[in-house]
Image (cartoon, rainbow, N blue to C red):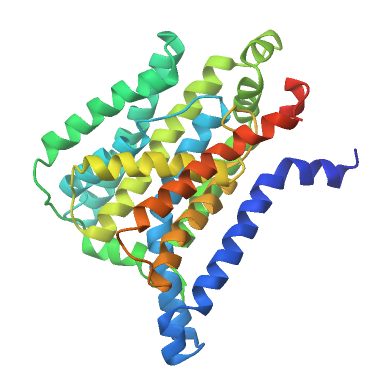
Length: 334
């Protein structure tokens, strides 16, 4: 197989997710009421992009977190609760002077990474199934969030929040720049490292990876830890957007379920060993655009959850449909 064909086969899911997002966002943009009223101009397009980006990046961070675990052939059902916990924590400690705010941000990120590390340690050393482990730890994380914020409230450093949720040069959404920065700082080094390649190998075949000398435990542990870290970045941004913390069970569960749909839409195999966090990001943006399209076309709000549920079911089923054409399990990872 030629090099370009191998690259295309490897990135097919990501490219498809990008294509789906571009088509859906173009439809959304061309039918947006603001465009109909004022036409195409920089200010209008910038405002629409900022609104869409600020909603999309929350799910994008959680989807990135989910993708790292799914690549190892696991699943993290606590990712939404880590997101909720760090939102509640941020509403307590990301306040005050610039130095205090910086310390608060580092504290939130550390707690998120710790949540992921706990998940990984239990899965690796306790030898429990990821789905069972993360259901249990997710309940614990939500309990802590509820203890922190039994009622919605709190605050956040307004200057930092405005900086990271506003627009750069009054044109480009700052949240997208942060998202791209996280990809460069976290995902790219991980995916190109020995540990990252080990995570893919573990997802393809745990036993084969072990027999080949791949650091199986380290690969899984780092993947789970980074998953918690990425979820905490999402929690931070939720605090920046809302200026408050809230231990909302429905929100945590929704983000968990939507993150699974996003990773599948982004070409990440639920069987592990295939896909990328970049694909998960575009899967998340595409999934968010579905809700925007429903708004643009005046879809009855009572039917919106049903429509999104159908899309979610179809998205999660996509990976299973691929098994019908697989004759040899190795083909799934080829």
